[in-house]
Length: 313
Image (cartoon, rainbow, N blue to C red; front, side):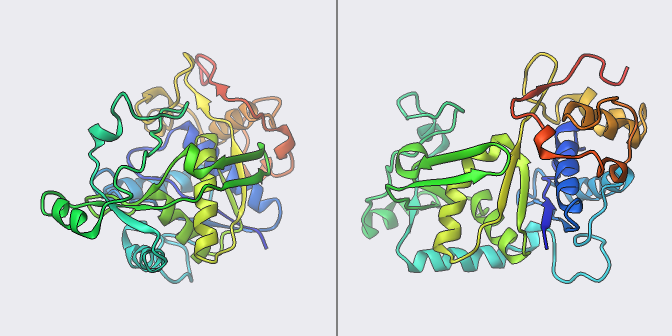
């Protein structure tokens, strides 16, 4: 059975990009008779207070995008808040440490983003391995001054996969991203580790998410391999852009549900998003359930989608 999931980070009210992600994940799993999990990715407690998560749960219920397992779902065990799952991440980290693949990193943010540091096209720093060869004595001396982050050594190996929507994608980890973080210097576990551990533990077989996360998949495939876990099927979809071409974010008030909910119905909102994504030609109001008959990944574009001006009048 297909098990899909929606895993938002509750740092504010959800915007159209978040809603499109949830809609596509919901339709993709439901159309195959599958189940849907809601997981709250609130590792960063300062940015993700519980009230935002509670509001997000209410928003998804208003939209009619209901889940089978997750917060407030009947009959499910365990927790679906990442902030309560850190013991699982610690256990995975210790397994990787036992393999001799984890090392402390003392580089500051300023050092990582220095002009001389190699950067990818998306602006992400390619870690140069500055702390990779520190001796235990050197690491201990630096740890007296500041707590280290923990990085995973990557091989000089290419990880390729077929994204079920975007097609073939691959990266050679040593050249294209470098050793990546597993835990920050403040003790917070990194997204790459947490998402792999959680998707595997929850039995997720299909991951639908934005194309901005496509480049993170090779790192996650490496972690799946090291931890002896089976990776899910991945489908990355194009990003929604503001009318001026900027990437949509929670700062775009006109695209946030806090603004839109007072102006449009849930059916109007979902209908417009389905129109932008290619499977509601009329753009008229639609419920999530009614869109099941028209949804197809073949209809969803692969290029980023720019929101029209005055989309909702």
